[in-house]
Length: 321
Image (cartoon, rainbow, N blue to C red; front, side):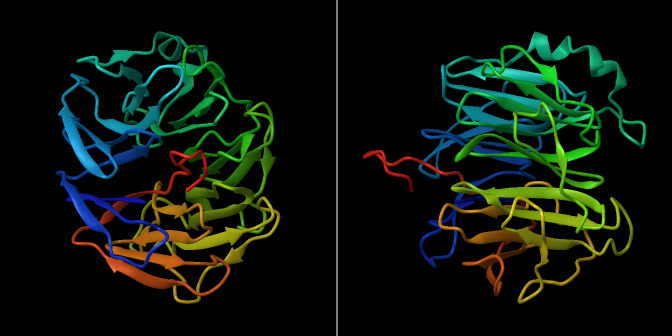
């Protein structure tokens, strides 16, 4: 498991109770992605830091002018990084290259003219997710989800039945066809790679959503966060768990804050391959071996936790870990 904070990257073996260990110091780190061989994190100044086994390999300055908001490690058919930015641009950085180049098919999407933000600033590629069959999904805030079925070469928009104000997109290694989104109107799920969507926010009251996480081995088990809205002295942020694809939801409050003043944000919830649930509130990292049961404070970080990653990996003998 990788834990990103405003001051650096920490690693932890989710199968143990050992506390996370510092792996690299980063200034206001923004986002992280895990791959089979390489992991990547992005600092606030746009510097890309590559890791292997939780240990720093190298740092890259790739010459992207826009602030980087999301990163995705892809290792097939060729190793590369996809980088989503403000201005809703998507860049590709092939392994071994010195600079990233814009993805022209993403820039040329006809729907780009309708992308916006409520406050009048530039839209952004807020999150990225990949399925094991090569499909990639880019969450445009605000502008819905863009889909690629050929490893990021060409792109199309998801169907308009999805709420356009998407805050996180997620996939499940055990169910390549499924896509999950948390939006300003709570959770939507697609069973056909974004061609159609089913609303799963009824029991969440259609509230403002931020984070969405999926069990990597069980596509029915989800964590989602909702609140009263993006701003305010107390947005009443809450964490919910579902084990039936979002048909029903349980409010998480046994050992976990029943309500938080700030949003539990994009990237701040995760489910590890062993089924444990994880969520960050400020500097505190909470964990539960069964997300429907008791939660406890697992660790208090030296700075605010900004992102969690619990990717399903394959060991050298081919078994999942």
